[in-house]
Length: 194
Image (cartoon, rainbow, N blue to C red; front, side, top):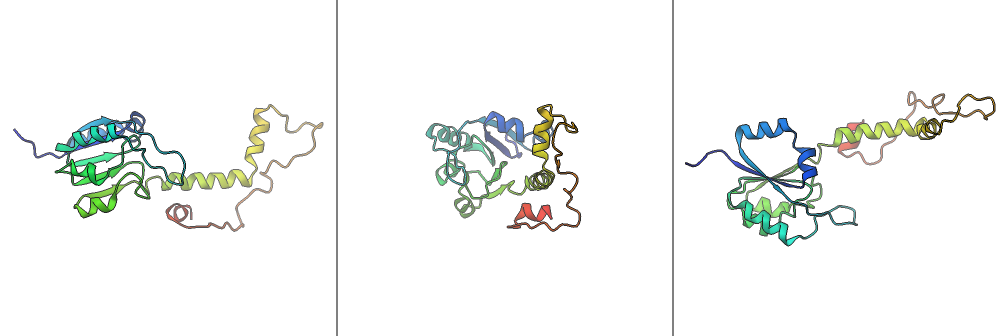
């Protein structure tokens, strides 16, 4: 008996599996598709501005063997590059998704996928909200000299001791109210920060 449900393969390392696939999400996936996790642990190349998966023939062969019956492939850290050779092994492959962003096609050969009618999706913008929030937090930390304040706190420094010279801890004049903040390069994260 054959199933009309799509078959989805998750190809990633254990950390990505635990970090990006919450139990509720896996339950939701199981509601409309059959799925399987293929544990792979291909490291990222060190150096360069953008990380790419290291060429790993064994992991690529494992992935190719698993793709025979796959309709959708979801990759993340640990997956090898999804090249034309890999896509050749998946005659039913119609979707490739990247959970860790693939801003510069570092893991997926997007042009080859498009030429074969395979849709490619990623989470490039998925981290924009928390990164924008982090940027705002770093602005406030820098403005208020919070790093120095924290170092004194953990060193058990006495702040108001008459024996110490007065120190501006940053909060007296460290306000954003009434100040102008310039953002250089308003990409997705910069626009979220506005």
